[in-house]
Image 1 (tube, rainbow, N blue to C red):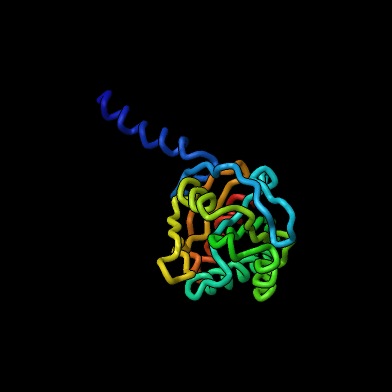
Image 2: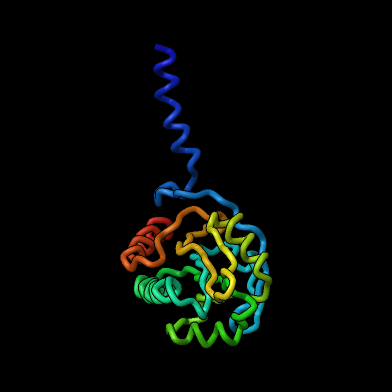
Length: 192
């Protein structure tokens, strides 16, 4: 009987151990490594600047011929939905091709998607190895250099939800337009 009581108590402990964000069913628990990178406006954005804010991250590059197009379109759509629902969240798109994606190139790219820079930043100003390590270690998202003769970087397609204390807790399919409503729904749970 005593063993039964202990076994019944374990799930309760685990539920409380999931923390305050359990209402959105987190599928990750990674601390985002410190960073300080250059925005599309040649300003600096750091992890510390995002402290206290919910944010969504993704990894893209401007001369991508495949997944970045729907991803950036979906992020633009997400930004619109967030505004419509009066949800104050930051959006951060890290370039995985920093040698090509200068701040000016990123700004021109972002403007093609009607990005509002008040809460959406496109980051560069680092070398490829730095962004590769950030992607893999902080977001568990693979980034591979282009094959010989190609300029196409291989990278993950997730949109990643980060808490105000810098924890990556949930991933969403960035090429699936329906996921944007799921992100909005999850943010409503933690913000309202």
